[in-house]
Amino acid sequence: MFIVSVVIPVYNKEPHVKRALRSVLNQTVQDFEMIVINDRSTDKSLQEVKSFSDPRIRLISQENSGVSIACNRGIDEAKSELIAFLDADDEWIPDYLETILRLRESYRMQACM
Image (tube, rainbow, N blue to C red; front, side):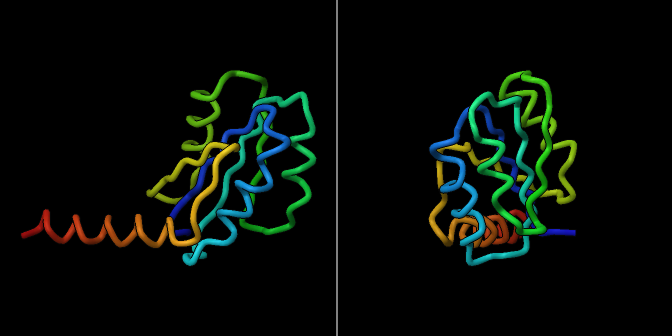
Protein backbone atom coordinates (compact mmCIF):
# COMPACT_ATOMS: atom_id res chain seq x y z
CA MET A 1 0.00 0.00 0.00
CA PHE A 2 1.16 3.51 -0.81
CA ILE A 3 0.46 6.79 0.98
CA VAL A 4 -0.81 8.36 -2.24
CA SER A 5 -1.83 7.30 -5.74
CA VAL A 6 -0.93 9.85 -8.40
CA VAL A 7 -3.20 9.70 -11.44
CA ILE A 8 -1.97 11.21 -14.70
CA PRO A 9 -4.35 11.10 -17.67
CA VAL A 10 -2.48 11.37 -20.96
CA TYR A 11 -3.75 12.26 -24.41
CA ASN A 12 -1.24 13.56 -26.96
CA LYS A 13 1.14 15.19 -24.48
CA GLU A 14 4.41 13.93 -25.98
CA PRO A 15 6.30 17.23 -25.48
CA HIS A 16 5.35 17.44 -21.79
CA VAL A 17 4.70 14.03 -20.25
CA LYS A 18 8.31 13.25 -19.31
CA ARG A 19 8.54 16.49 -17.35
CA ALA A 20 5.31 15.64 -15.51
CA LEU A 21 6.51 12.13 -14.60
CA ARG A 22 9.95 13.40 -13.51
CA SER A 23 8.30 15.97 -11.25
CA VAL A 24 6.51 13.15 -9.42
CA LEU A 25 9.62 10.98 -9.24
CA ASN A 26 11.53 13.94 -7.76
CA GLN A 27 9.14 14.40 -4.82
CA THR A 28 10.57 14.56 -1.30
CA VAL A 29 7.89 12.01 -0.36
CA GLN A 30 8.60 8.82 -2.26
CA ASP A 31 5.81 6.56 -0.96
CA PHE A 32 3.51 6.79 -3.98
CA GLU A 33 2.33 4.91 -7.00
CA MET A 34 1.86 6.63 -10.32
CA ILE A 35 -1.02 5.54 -12.53
CA VAL A 36 -0.68 6.83 -16.07
CA ILE A 37 -3.84 6.44 -18.13
CA ASN A 38 -3.09 6.59 -21.85
CA ASP A 39 -6.33 7.73 -23.46
CA ARG A 40 -5.31 6.33 -26.86
CA SER A 41 -2.78 9.03 -27.70
CA THR A 42 -1.93 9.30 -31.38
CA ASP A 43 1.47 10.92 -30.84
CA LYS A 44 4.47 9.37 -29.07
CA SER A 45 3.22 9.97 -25.51
CA LEU A 46 3.01 6.23 -24.90
CA GLN A 47 6.66 5.71 -25.87
CA GLU A 48 7.71 8.60 -23.63
CA VAL A 49 5.98 7.01 -20.64
CA LYS A 50 7.43 3.57 -21.48
CA SER A 51 10.94 5.07 -21.36
CA PHE A 52 10.65 5.14 -17.54
CA SER A 53 11.50 1.96 -15.66
CA ASP A 54 10.38 2.89 -12.14
CA PRO A 55 8.26 0.04 -10.75
CA ARG A 56 5.88 2.53 -9.11
CA ILE A 57 4.64 3.60 -12.55
CA ARG A 58 1.67 1.68 -13.91
CA LEU A 59 0.70 2.39 -17.49
CA ILE A 60 -2.87 1.61 -18.50
CA SER A 61 -4.08 2.14 -22.06
CA GLN A 62 -7.73 2.54 -22.92
CA GLU A 63 -9.88 3.57 -25.87
CA ASN A 64 -10.11 7.34 -26.24
CA SER A 65 -12.90 8.26 -23.85
CA GLY A 66 -11.93 11.71 -22.60
CA VAL A 67 -10.15 13.04 -19.54
CA SER A 68 -13.00 12.43 -17.08
CA ILE A 69 -13.24 8.73 -17.94
CA ALA A 70 -9.42 8.48 -17.80
CA CYS A 71 -9.40 10.06 -14.32
CA ASN A 72 -12.16 7.75 -13.14
CA ARG A 73 -10.20 4.77 -14.46
CA GLY A 74 -7.22 5.98 -12.45
CA ILE A 75 -9.36 6.17 -9.32
CA ASP A 76 -10.60 2.62 -9.94
CA GLU A 77 -7.01 1.38 -10.32
CA ALA A 78 -5.62 3.27 -7.30
CA LYS A 79 -4.27 1.28 -4.37
CA SER A 80 -4.28 4.23 -1.98
CA GLU A 81 -7.18 5.99 -0.33
CA LEU A 82 -5.55 9.35 -1.07
CA ILE A 83 -5.51 10.26 -4.75
CA ALA A 84 -3.70 13.17 -6.38
CA PHE A 85 -4.22 14.24 -9.98
CA LEU A 86 -1.58 15.73 -12.23
CA ASP A 87 -2.20 16.85 -15.81
CA ALA A 88 0.34 15.41 -18.22
CA ASP A 89 1.38 18.90 -19.32
CA ASP A 90 1.93 20.17 -15.79
CA GLU A 91 4.54 19.56 -13.08
CA TRP A 92 4.89 19.64 -9.31
CA ILE A 93 7.57 21.35 -7.25
CA PRO A 94 9.63 18.78 -5.31
CA ASP A 95 7.86 19.22 -1.98
CA TYR A 96 4.30 19.26 -3.34
CA LEU A 97 3.24 15.89 -1.90
CA GLU A 98 5.01 16.60 1.39
CA THR A 99 3.11 19.88 1.71
CA ILE A 100 -0.24 18.32 0.83
CA LEU A 101 0.27 15.48 3.32
CA ARG A 102 1.33 17.92 6.06
CA LEU A 103 -1.72 20.13 5.43
CA ARG A 104 -3.98 17.09 5.40
CA GLU A 105 -2.63 15.99 8.76
CA SER A 106 -2.81 19.50 10.20
CA TYR A 107 -6.44 19.99 9.23
CA ARG A 108 -7.35 16.48 10.35
CA MET A 109 -5.94 17.35 13.78
CA GLN A 110 -7.95 20.59 13.91
CA ALA A 111 -11.15 18.77 12.96
CA CYS A 112 -10.68 16.45 15.95
CA MET A 113 -10.40 19.31 18.45
